[in-house]
Structure formats: structure tokens, C-alpha cells
Length: 424
Image (tube, rainbow, N blue to C red; front, side, top):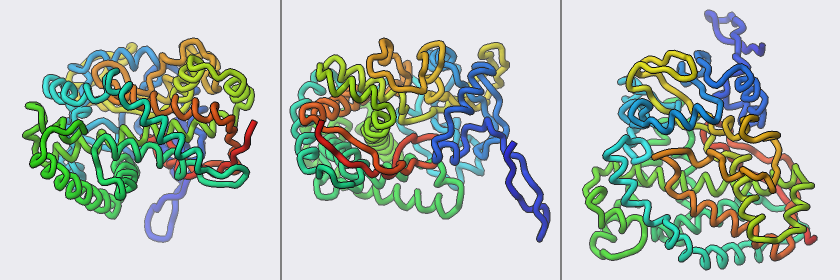
């Protein structure tokens, strides 16, 4: 059991125990050491009480099927911001609410309000719209790849993952193109659950949120005066469910769409480079077989292996039971998608990438049930396009130093990854 020093009284330190199975610890994720604790938890059972986390006591659900079960019962296992939101960072106490922004986004709502708002946005990510965006995705991906150096080190996260996802976000929102990289910054801050652990961090998050709100309120007003657009802001304005949102609710839904659209796709694109570098035999399969069907399956496998958002949180609305464990009303429950996607009973050898895995598309990286990621098809399009365009150019990505990983247990991603390209 690891220890660290904590003050006992001035000038004296007493060792404090660190629970090695507390999978909320930022160091486990920053050092990419979370897999073994998750494996040990799965071996012990599907659900565990964690009272060691700095985020407060909660249940950790680590098996695939119990997570599906919970997700299928939104009346009993609430996502509402009123109970504390969708990450284990937040809770429902007045003390917590006094120094954190409340974010009533539709992913953090229960039916019927969730249903109405999601129904407004969902058509923008439907099959017809995805097909309409396909040509543009290929064009932009090609342009980015054709500007990359061969045989010279560069940061894949910045040059490819961030650039491609930020371009797509700017198009979705009709956001000023020359200012599009602000979207990346706002997403990074909005999805950072560690930043709320200090007063300075909470203040910075509030200031960043206000900056984003100001920019989008200007865009909102412009769209209101010039109706008829096909972008997400115009779609919100044209709907009964979302046109009269309070400013805080408008901001919250933007955070949702930006963080969801940025982090899922961006970190899967980075995982493509890092994962295939670690499994050169799987990379060789993709290099030898350029079929669209394999590219799609590999896309699902990369998303499964990475799981860009490692958990979501639910709150029990009544006394109930999960897998024989008594759950009390108001208990917090962390659904560890990252663990479910390595569940040995569903994905044998799940810690490894297998681009031909038969059930890769069964992953839970996009969630399950009524809160399944509304933009999943768009993320799939972007990653599949990247795989296909790399194959077309016969480009191999070699990671030249270990990547810098996001030090947090919510957004599971990469801050920096130095690579070199070569032709095969």
C-alpha cells in the first residue's frame, strides 16, 4: 500500500494510506497505470464502494452488463445536474454549489426535458447529415495530412488531432474560423475535473466559462437576427425546446457539445497513433488491407481501447440494489466505461488492440441508453476518414517519445505526442 506524508500538526508529518484501487487518482491516468487497478476491481466483482477518493465516497461500477443495466434505468439512476451532474467531481451539497458553476445541459437532465432538447439537436447528427459532411471531412483531412513533414518529428496532438476536430467544431457552430482554436481551450477547461480542486482553479474555470459565454452570446444574437442557418446555434434558436433557454443553460449545452465533439474525436485520433505504434502487428494488418470494412472495424476498436471519457456518474433517486449491493437514495455511482470496455467476459484480451475484433462496435465509449453520445456518428466518420486517408497515402505513424497524458479520470486523452511519419 502506497503512502504519502500529510500534516499531523505544525512541523510533524504522518504517513497517510493511498488506496491502490482508488481509480479516481489522477496519477494513475497521467502515468497510464489505471488498467491493472481496474482489472483487480473487475476480478473482485462488478461494483465497489470507494470512500478513499478525493472526490468523495461513491460506488464504482466496473463490469459491462451492470453499466448497461444502470444506463437503462434513468428514472432510478439520475443524470440530473440538480443531483450533482455527470462526473464524480460534483455533488449536490450547498457548499459545493457555492463555488462551482451549475451546468444544466441536456446530458445532465432527466426526461422529459432531456428528451425534448436532445430531439432538437439529434437531427444535426443523423445519417443524412453525416453523409452530407463526408466529402468535407475527406477534404479537410487530406489537406492536414498533406502538410505534414515526412521523417521529421512533430506533435500529432496539435497538428492533427486538435486541428481536425477544431475545424469540424467551427463548421458545426459556424464559429469564426480564425478564432476556432478558442474552442479547444474552452473544451480543455470545461472537461477538466481536476481544476475544481483549488479556489484558483475554480475561479479560472468560471472566468473561462464567462469568456466562452460572451463569444457565443454574440453568435446567438447574430443568428437570431439572421435566421435560417443549418448550424447548431441556429438549430437551437429555431426549436421550441431550446429557443428560450436561460443563459446558463445555453452555456451548459455549448460546453456539452464542444467537450463531447472535441474530446471524443480528438483523443481517439491520438489513440490511433499511440495504439498502433504499440501494436505493430495490428498496424501491419491495416497497412496490408485497405478495405473500408476493416477501417470501420478498426475505428470502433480504437475507440473501445481508448474510451475517451473514462466514466460518467449517476445518482440514485431511491433505495435500490445493484448486483446484490444495497444502494441508498442519493448515493453517487461512477460508471467506469474504461473498465467495461476491457471486461474480459465481453472483450477477451481487452487490454490489447485487435483491429479485426468481431464485436468491437459493442464498446460503451459513447455510453448506452438515452444518454448515448448524440454525436457518435460524427466521431466515427472523422476517425474512419483519418484511417482511410492515412492508408491512401501509405503513411505510417511512429511515436518517438512517450506521450503526455491528461492527468485526470474523466477526459482520457493526450496533451502531447511527438511522432515521425514514414512511407510504407
